[in-house]
Image (cartoon, rainbow, N blue to C red):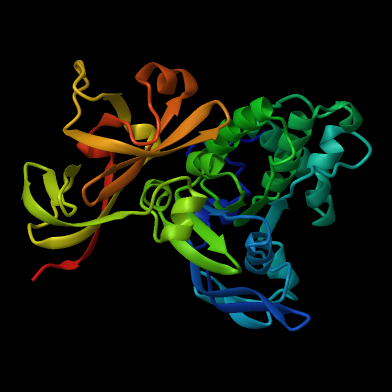
Length: 382
């Protein structure tokens, strides 16, 4: 192996060293049997960043991935790499991408045979191929596994080999389509952390499709949310998953819809928002008089007994609320809290709900930090 000291890449990995491309699609539509299954006006995958697409089954995520990866020709629309239009039939363009799918399809033979398969198809010399295979295995934490039989690998090992195979060809665009969805929860979470670390280190332009928002939040620089073939929300993970664009997005990400209000004071990095009877403090410098949407994730909200000792919580927001609903979700309970002009959720353990005596109609005190409140400007007030 001949690592490049500046980037940790083999010297011949010129495309990656020079910079992975920005990928953009415009006016992309796909129709099957007269039915539109994908309708995206525009989407941009930033260079050297990971873009995660999330949404329910059938939302069009995998179809969009295939279009952006030049694996499927759209009914209408164009795909550009750094401003240059690419077409699915262009073999040179296709070779700029590689993919990891839901199930790690491996060939009979050794790990080296599998990782080097794409390089062999590209007629890369055997010596260089061995160097690239060794480099890719090192990147996924399996250095020295070249002679292992592919038939003896566990599910997690097989998926890491599939990722190594994709990385070995030094792609400019890496596609990952539900790469961890069939794994058990413990293995899935461990590999999520590993994949996130690898994607950040390799700095390849990546499109990561998943239905799991926690997975997306860990791996992605940008998150897009799809519904019925359309891109309905987009932004950094904190914004896309923490400040819902509409009621459907709120329900999908497990939150109450964003609250609306007006900034009544601003200073020292803190704004106070009047939500129609309830004042909520948020981190920011939005000018007074600005209409905003705000939201707080349920896991950022603590509940205490009304009139009880809150302790040294350090929260800038202390709001007396009425419990409107309790929704069990596995080991946790989603508690819907309401105050004049404000409605948000809190995520508590079942034991905490019992200890606090929470029930529909009961009173409680919600506490959360100003820094946990996401703010989006919606226009200046009159």
